[in-house]
Image 1 (cartoon, protein in one colour):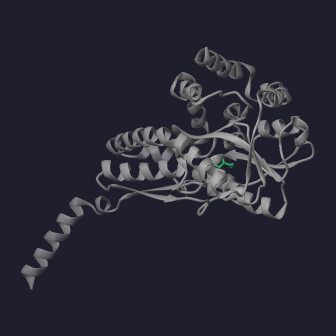
Image 2 (image 1 turned 90 degrees about the horizontal axis):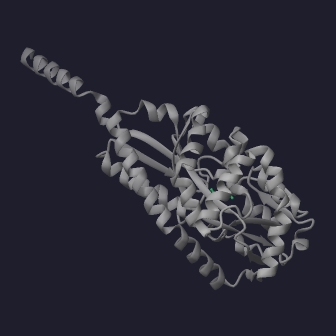
Image 3 (image 1 turned 90 degrees about the vertical axis):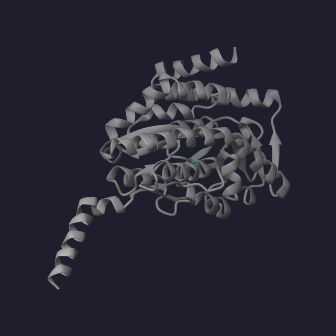
Length: 333
Ligand code: LMR
């Protein structure tokens, strides 16, 4: 009996030296509001796969898509409180947190193509913007694409006059609010998860989003027309709770950084295809008529939205807008 007791305490001592913590993986809850079959949804799944592989299972990533855990505004609060560790909100969602600079991404036609976008996000300007998140207890890890936005409604949206009096759902961005006001529309802030129903019941008449979001949320089933405007961009900042990130063991943080870098390359390489495929599916469904604008009609839309730049200068700063415009000019020239 005595030998057994000694043996048992030796085993207990050995176990305590290994430490119970080593058996418990570090959990990263990654919450987002879109479907899994989207650029962001696939990026999150790729990060999970790589993070778990590179840390040898020491980290477990739980991905919660489709607002199953939190809606738009709640998710940022939850991250700051540490209830969730990782998110990828759109650039538009940072204004209400007090980081207005990210709303520059919402300016109509500011990013003419993905090439310009990459120059911004992968250069010093992008790094500087990420740094702004620190003061809110947030660490910015990467920029992920979605794509360019289209306008949808139950009426044909061709000229700026067609937007007069139309109720549009918007994300919580003052720049987007100014954009629709410039068109004479009535913008209404609403969580992403509520858009489909709001369109179906007529709470709002229209919305703006990327092909992949329109398709995976079935918005095309409750919108008769979608105009291919490509007037704005939706992209994301992958963020973590700063304290959680800083407190991670250095080797784990390095492995997760590597996973994030590769997941970012993966996600951004397929975002365009995701949107192209979604457009093809919408066309195939025949549920929504796709409207293309002529060069003159496109020009009229650009002109109608020009006043938004002046309005936004007071919020995001003229100097920042100029930096973006300079990048665009040097890319397209
Ligand atoms: C929206 O709210 O329309 C989008 O930002 C949702 C998303 O995360 O793509």
